[in-house]
Image 1: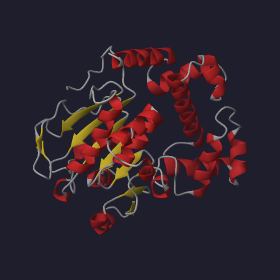
Image 2: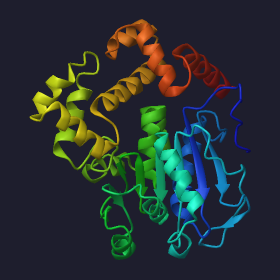
Image 3: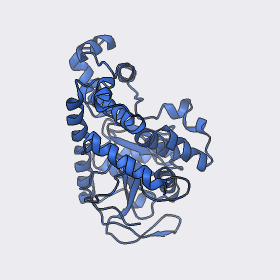
Image 4: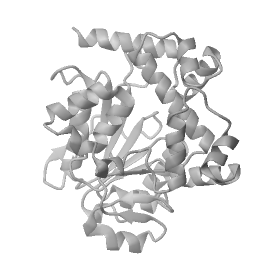
Length: 336
């Protein structure tokens, strides 16, 4: 299926992912991620890209071969300008990612500046490292590349015992099947039911991605204890956010220190991070409940419906009513 055009007027997906396949990329992690998206995108085994959509791209818009020898043709031209929910850099053999072209690293910097999360698979972390996007950040890498990675990127913090790490908008996955990463992304954007569906169809025990080791790699868990504690506080106060000065006092730091710690760990100020959490909660309530927009605004700590609508449009590029309309249309299509 060809990638949907930006002006597509049909039902819009909950999750869009752009895959940039680097020559000699590792097939297993790419397959685990996209197969998970496929099961979450449609009911049963329909494989229609309704709730999730993705596009295959290459650096020169020509077919590329995986490290196992499987050739793959792109179905969309390379496009960094789209409002992707996630942009994946799928690496593999190191000789292809050690010295990425400057145009690619610059494009990734621009994506990051637009707050579009970048996922690195396998040696894709070397591309992000070359772009300077991992400086001061933790990143999950394959144990066989740790020494070289440290030598090339001394400002980064490589970790070899995590299935993936989300630090400051860069989500690094060292390889494997990437199913636990996919399940968490689907849970966040599409809801728990479809995440569970994915794990069931792929014959993966849910405990595998909900145990202690996986929890340590989930997006809202960070190495900094203050950040983790404050995020837990925020989750329990989504409906009535207290002033951030009081949150800082709760954490035992100053307001300025709180923002500095959050910016370093998450890439966002504490206020922006909290607002994004509340907007995600609001979107889930819009999808899974019949509450009015005003009721959802109150439940997620916004002053009123107008306040929520303004921030929702800014964050997601559409109004809550349009979001609900396309969700109903997508559900109607799934029942056909």
